[in-house]
Length: 111
Image (cartoon, rainbow, N blue to C red; front, side, top):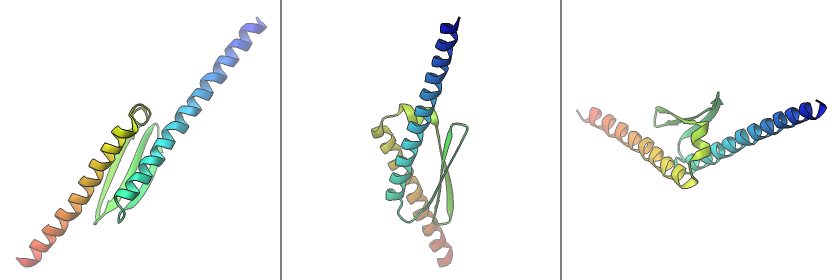
C-alpha cells in the first residue's frame, strides 16, 4: 500500500515536472518569436502577453495595431523554420499595411 502511494506521488511529480518543462519550452519559443519580430519590424512597438495557453503578440506600426495569436501547442509542435516563415509573413503584412496607409494618406492630400 505504501509503495502504491509512493508510485502515485512520483507519477504526479513527473507529470507536474513535464508540464513545467512544456510551459518553459513554449515561453522560450515565444521569446524567440518576440525577438525575431523586433528585428523584422525595427520601427514597431511590440508587446507580449499569454493567458490560458494563448500567446499574444501585439504590434503597433504606422498607427495600426495588430494582434497575432499562437496556441501553446503550435509553439511546441512547429519547427523553428516553420515559425521563421510565419514571422516573415507577419512582418510583410505589417509593413505592407503601413505602406498602404501612407499611400492612402498621400492620395487624400493630393485630391
